[in-house]
Length: 249
Image (spheres, rainbow, N blue to C red):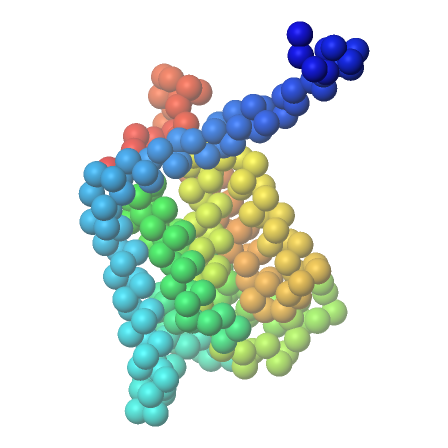
């Protein structure tokens, strides 16, 4: 007989929350983590060539723009501001997401690209990674113009001064890719948390151009996911599969 039993005490029940949480976490992230781990173990850094290229490109742009001779060149090819002609912004938008934002240190941009782009490249392939990243970034670029046109009288509008804000950085693409990968792997809870976090960011933390662009990126990617879901052909066994497609690799 145990000491507690000898004293007539009742042993505390073992909590069941931990196994339940573990099962929920495994169901939410298990397939995604297995895909990432398997790919990295098998092919190591060769699994993310586009991500590594993006990291190197960001480093090069950061170095060049910090030089007196290179700042103007980098701004001319990758800096987006809402007051410029639309076609200029569209030409610069793809490169703008590899330039660190004004309020984000370069190491933050590099970490975002390496982790989120890397996971996306492994899980959905490099083509879809670049496509979704561009859609999310383009949504932010277009929202800046629409928000300024609406004006600050509306919660979704922006002040006229924001048209001079330099609009660069990978954060909109990162948020969009996070939502897209979660959708592809049916990690619904995480997808909802990411989307809600962007709304909370605007309401409570960063009610500015960058914060609202993150919400625009999430909405654009969710629209793409919804369209993709409607248009894709249904196959037997879709209900049992984690994502509706074969693995891209």
